[in-house]
Image (tube, rainbow, N blue to C red; front, side, top):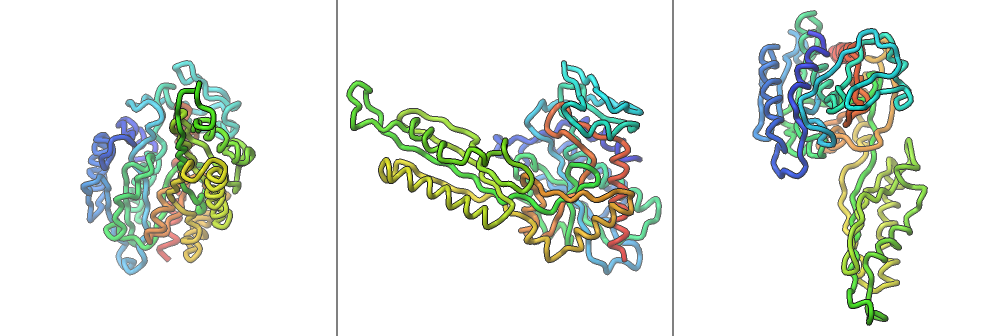
Length: 404
């Protein structure tokens, strides 16, 4: 079975995670796909298959005879899809010999090169798109399909390989994909996530990240007798926001440039809150950004009185590169596997986070490989049959490299 055929089966199962549920997994729908995948792993001859109480599916592919002493290579993908857009059964369209131009999806939406400049590069391939009213689910059911297609090819083509560990996880899209990941049970020495992007993409750097909440405490009295008494929290909040550099926002940064992102501001005269996320790839600059937050708190309290502004900072994740550097074979072998699959490696820094980053700091070095998908989390999501095949070829070559 080719990867796209598996993929079409998986996307028929809605699996959006739910950040408001408080459950683990966050959605009962994730169990449906997990059980389907467990059955498929059994049919493929996987061993040590475990579906945990929190919907983490683990399995092993035994090594070729004589190679079981090699380190265990892990492959990971997530089962949930983004809750950002239309959690409903997907009705995909396959466009054979795609002409590289605009595609009418439905629901009044058009996928066009004007929006996505890479589309002409897909000319001649079989394009898989949505019907315009759901997302597609390539993030990350394409990764699942490619990993299981690899497992099938290893057996059918008698490809020599060392021991492999496979894991499919829930709730990555709401930042909880590594929360209950059992590294010891997984049993890999190192791993790769298969999670989105061009099939020639390798990512082993991500942002350092924190969340920050400024709470502004005001004093509210009747405006007719407010002089010298009123402290308007809403006005102070807007003043506070203006202290941040306007050029250092997501809308004005790219590549390795960090930012401050005001995600929410709300309140009234009595009380107001501002929520920020802060990102930077460079650890020193990241700490400078953290210090800036406290400097803003100090400046506002010096002006309006101690306790007027209260800052709460929560670290979210760190740049995985510091955990990858001691294991650069992961990077070099991934590049070589791509070259052997006919690709020119594209090394990019993630402008966001990844489960691989959290897993790296849990003791499992874990860069990310692309699956061939584009425009995730919305109705313009798309992927091609051929690029999924190529992603599988990359995995095959990677496994061969680790069998030496």
